[in-house]
Image (cartoon, rainbow, N blue to C red; front, side, top):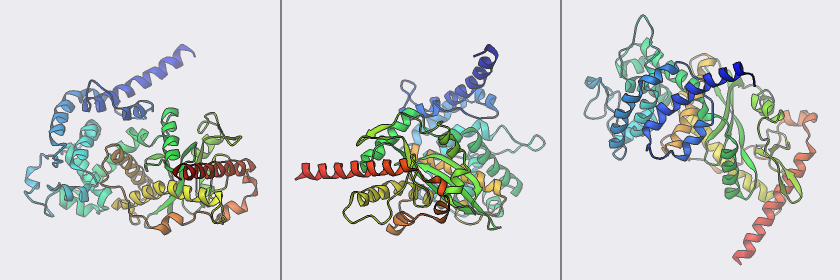
Length: 429
């Protein structure tokens, strides 16, 4: 590589790495780096105002000490607007005192809120309007933004609760979404090869099916003009979002949406799911996703069998697929449980997309923090079986998507699963 391009590359990467070190490592044990930080260091940030991170180190150390003392008690974080925080929960209290109320208002534990405030502090405070700076603490800025996302409350209600103008409440909500979607979008970035191996191992442990890299699905949100806004999501077995593309035309079917996404192009161009295939019953099986009947059967996208015979290996495969799909259904239900996404959004499409992105990032943050405050576990049997096997009209109309290799791969996986089930029964007997 020429020296100039190399220098440009290094100059862009170094401040990004410093940004992560300054924002995350001070919160951890300095003698050991947890394994969940390696995925973060393996992704590139596209961030603005990186220079703001250099001023945060001393403040973060003090805040980290306070966080450590509150972690077990899960106390709500303090706010500099003490006149607005009552001794008991009330409509006038912007930040509740009790842990249960705190989770209801912000969809996270107080300790997670404090951790997030510490992480986002320099970014939430460095972009105030030049002509009218906002004199609010980081906790209140974060609280205003999270309150909009978690409850879906309108701006007059937010303004009244937090004692700020509607303009300020709008600014804080927009700022939080911008910071999350710009500076921390790597939290929903596709895993590196080492992480992807962990994903496939988890699916195989859960179902017995090897080399699966995620569950692909599409859900839709609406604004008041009834415009469907599609979000295409890939999740792992723990419901962590591995990839999300939002803002696509929700009037289209799932497969046309997939074909128009960067995910499809990257897979077709061998930029993703490009590891060496494994041998399954003498069939070369590449890395792949699983999807429902709205998608075609491809070499890298495996869908359930249609009307399998009872007791057959095909039926066993479909049952295993149902287990994998639960993680996707939980993720979609969890995103819809955020108040701002639970109903048509009274704002333009790009704002809805920002809300989807911010809630997706927060979803993964909560999982990383082992905070299940916003994770939905209430799923019905019908929701698991819905659209499992019936192909959609979009798939049936496109004859050019037939992939014979996909049939071979699915049959090999079903046979492997059946052999494993038979072997397990033999060992048990």
